[in-house]
Length: 367
Figure 1 (spheres, rainbow, N blue to C red):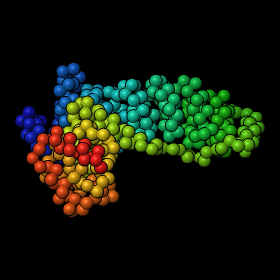
Figure 2 (cartoon, helix red, strand yellow):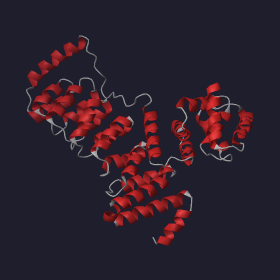
Figure 3 (tube, one colour):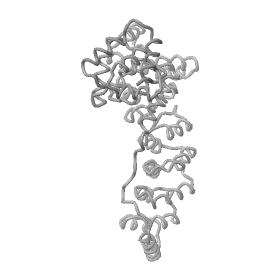
Figure 4 (spheres, helix red, strand yellow):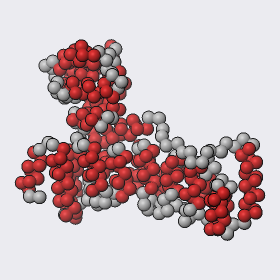
């Protein structure tokens, strides 16, 4: 595209024009990948992309992630933000982006949801330092994904650790039985925990002594009946309480540090039906305590939410839409009905954002 066409797109706000602009810039950078990787250009690209992406629709972010997944020139800040986005957006980035380094992947194992961690464990040619982090955390679903990753840098000790986990994590057994780094010694340990068809495959693959193994199996079963609980086949825990909220807080922190967290992000979060992300972003923008925002969302006084929104620069004309979307996502709260909505409009009386913020803190404290 010509420079005039790019400038024309930059002036437009429609989602389809935003997407065309992102695609055009992506193509331009891909064509000049070497120049795009220089520090000065990287700084400029990071600013441009982050500005466009922060308020972009979900489908636009997803398509951008797919286009940037293999790009070596992609700005690291942008790639890390996309890696913390919803899993459908993050998946191609986590799976393939050369910009994500080992320390970024280890951080995802700590900061992101189980779904994101599973994608890290599936990443081709996973380095030993990331494998070690997965083994330390010992999340069943993530261990299972690692066991199915034949290209990961697993040492003999790593495989031994995974085999040891098969006693409590049933889902590990089948992928480990097929793993190219499984040894005959470890196959004998695995044999006693798998079903009949997998036992037969292990015996054929490693030329195992079936009578001896059946004896070991009988001993293990006696131990199990003596009080060792056995997990049902295929049962894997894939969620932890509050993990998605924690990841959303970290995403908000990254956007704030990059100076890309703006009031428009609040509307995007609500359009995507992510109330906890809205609450985290509002608290960060206004420098409020999270419990103050939660209180405003759950109260019978929508004027509390209005004060918080006024404090971060939300326009009076936009607030009714925000209130309606919050109520839809929060079982009708904040309450107060139509009368409460009219009272809330008074929070946008001529005053500075600082005054609105102080009033919100005082009102939340009094409540």
